[in-house]
Length: 114
Image (cartoon, rainbow, N blue to C red; front, top):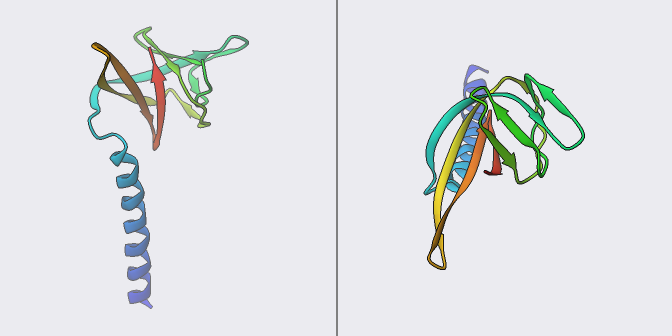
């Protein structure tokens, strides 16, 4: 019985690491540029302080240093004043450079823009 429990724990652990590897594979070339606490957010029609309720296109995420990023996709998640890790990757197109941003909160990765 102990052997079976050990095997099950190992199998579930391998799946968790495989999922993490799949997520991180999409972030090759990105660099961690900051780590911040989310203070709140606002949309055109509502806002909230202290809580993070995920992203929807156009939602402005406000950090404790009063800097902001804007969501470029949808994803629901709830956390109170979570830490966000900000990633960036420089992209060059037709002689111009710009940055693509990602925000990691918990185990979710969000596409963002400045």
